[in-house]
Figure 1 (cartoon, one colour):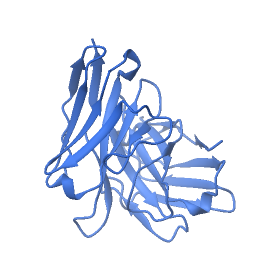
Figure 2: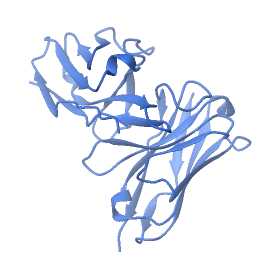
Figure 3: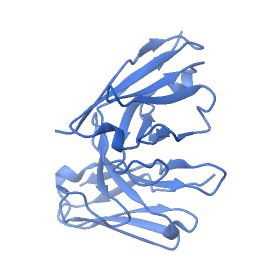
Figure 4: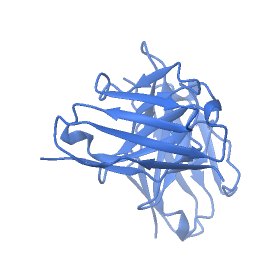
Length: 110
Length: 122
C-alpha cells in the first residue's frame, strides 16, 4: 500500500520560513493536499492540488510537488501557525481507491 | 454557512455496534462526495470511508472493510456510518468531511465537522 512519510516535528523561529516535507514513491504524479490541525480542533485545508490555496488562507502558505517529495512552505512564520500538519493523497494503485494521510508533522514556533 | 455536525458517538463494548450521523447544511448535499476520517487519541488522521454524491460509489479502508458501512440520505442531508463488530482500536474521534465535487475517489476535503468521539471498551 502507498505510504506517505512526514518528519514528526519541525521547529522554526518567528519570521522565518518553515518547510514540511511529505515523501512518497513518485508522489509528483499524484495530487497532494495539506491540512492544519490545532489542538482540540478539526483539520483545516490549507493547500490543495499541490499548490492551490483556499480562500481565507494567507499567502504565506504555499506548496510544491515533484519527484518523490511534496513540500508545504510557510513563510514569515507566526505563533498562530503552531499546529500539526498532514499531507493527503488518493491512492489508486491497487484494485480500489483509498485515501492516504501522512503521519503528521508538529510545527513548533520557537 | 456551510456546516457539518456529527452525532451518535459514545461508549460501546467490544463487538458492539454504533451508527454515526453527520447533518449537513448550507450547501446542496447531494452534489458532493463525503468521507469519514478518524483520529485515535494522540494519533494522526486515518481515512475510513468515502461515498459519492449520489451514493452509488463507496470506498473503505482495509481496516474497516466488512465491518463498517457508509451511506447517505440526500433527502435528509445526512451522512451515516454504521459500525459493527467494534474493536478497541476503533476508539477515535470520527470526523465527517466534504469533498468539493460529487465524484468520490479524488481530491481534497474542504469542509470538516467538529467530530464525535467513539470509545470501544468493556
